Image (cartoon, rainbow, N blue to C red):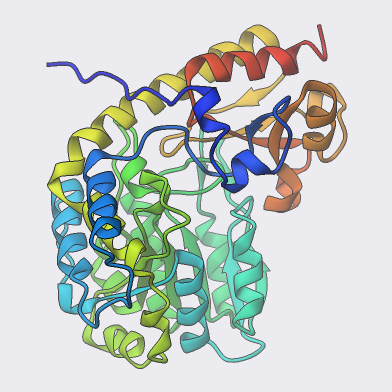
Length: 385
């Protein structure tokens, strides 16, 4: 039986939200910049949060909130990989977890490899941890992006101590292959480095691409890797603070256990409640519908760009709801997003914030109703019409 796409909420209801997406600009602007989606919450999440409010369950997060078992079960269902629940800890959000792990595995001034174009907070978190960013851009094969393993090896051989991995990759939507991830794990192991993998977009992988958890990519990955992830991107829970830190060996688990105790206390109770409901089997049907909706929209965007912005360059992402689009052919400057927002009343993410590789690019959030996507691209297209 075919799965029907999840329906986005109507604009008049979405504009009643008080989150960043809906409070940054006026009602004349279509917001497609920040990674929030326009769909109703999964019913299991709504029910769990409503029950907590009903009974006043608004206190401190308990010492053993149960999310370790829930995430292990979820990973087993989705990716046929079951991390050991004893090696799963929790914190406030993914970037918070990344910073704390980097602090633990690097020393001040150590270099950490990032692979631009990449999620802008990666640069900030490396610096917050006291380390120094070393850029090794993704390699463009002409058909897809991939990790530049030769460049990463050069950086590690020259003394870089860690690699901050985005798996799947934001903003390109690249789902890294097992071969690529295994190669990275072997390099890190050879040079005594670590890999910190942000896997927040993993549940949004679109077939036929197959998501490979870094810790499951090769035997060496368990020895060098730390995964930080959350239900927040897939289930639109960014305001409810909770993420998990996952390790694959006794040695790396000991590093995480040795983090300051307040790292776990930063997870909010509502975040834990919502993440547990998201990871529960009851939310799997909702996720299946969401993936159909996002699959339709990522393909619709290709058609709309061909119609309205034929000089734009876009590869349909393998994961997520974020589209990386090169509009440099239109001469809207190194950072086209402010021009588009001002002239077309469509707010897009600023390409250069993702690195120098983002010059002339924008990132478009397609986690919306198809009619909203059509209107947004038609508005932008009118600038060249």
